[in-house]
Image 1 (cartoon, rainbow, N blue to C red):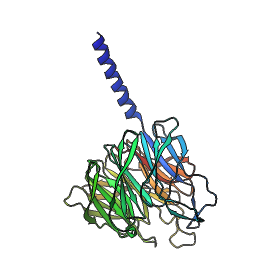
Image 2 (cartoon, rainbow, N blue to C red):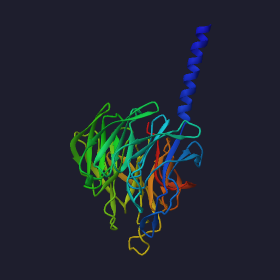
Image 3 (spheres, rainbow, N blue to C red):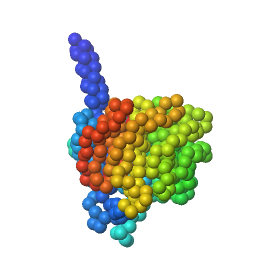
Image 4 (tube, one colour):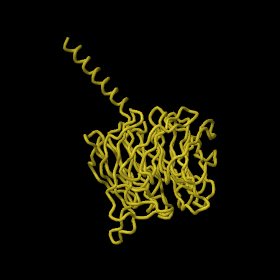
Length: 385
């Protein structure tokens, strides 16, 4: 009888653990208070409030704020400067820039990565680590054991191991010089490859991963002008990259990379509008959400100005992209994130300092809410499982 009770207790404990994991649905934003947009020009705020991190509960509709804590962040770089571990226990938040100690009207590259315990009540920063200069796009592998950070001001990628709640720097990979502007490193689902965007010299570099050993393969992919944000489908069949262009009013593009090809290569490119800042593949790999600035970050007298950005949804099928939906968003908008079921999409608006919430049914977008955050939401992310 005791054995039966022990087995039942173990089964119940495991079931409860699985239920908790299944119902945990978080999104995390990194909010920059250091800069503001003044008629098309990014300016440093005098005596700014601390940057913050907001934790959102996606189990309710619209999502609600669970916690907000101080942690350094930055709008400089693609809106992937926050990443969650698959079990949603940790968030890693990068700070690519900080106020220049010698001139408070300017910013300089930062190196800090904050490790946030999301299970703590309230969530709290439990460690601050050093990456490289301009620590920007961050990814955690789906095994929850490795994180990569692209360092924009070095041309390098920092490597961190993850064990429980301990994150440890284990090395750095040099890809090119600092002019390459390494922006984001996206890891394939099997954890064996990463693609690193370089908007400074218009390349995407392929890294090989074996445990904590990360090597540059010397294979570079050419997608479009200034590849910036990049995301890999959960099936590991393609990556979608946003080519932000040079900001001169021209329509810019999104490209598909066939990740399973040997070697990986671009197989599709479509136009989406001015400056596709954020990009995210839906959890089922069927759709790509693109945050298009659309000139909303330009001076009002500019011939390329528009009084809203655009959230564009593309269908990905047979290595082709087809537009299926579009909706207006705020100004100087950054990243996008899907809920685990793919039916809710979050968009961060820097000027409005809010997160716009959309319902998506596979055909149309409908705004269902807006969530105020303390700072401009420079990045937003959910766990990749």
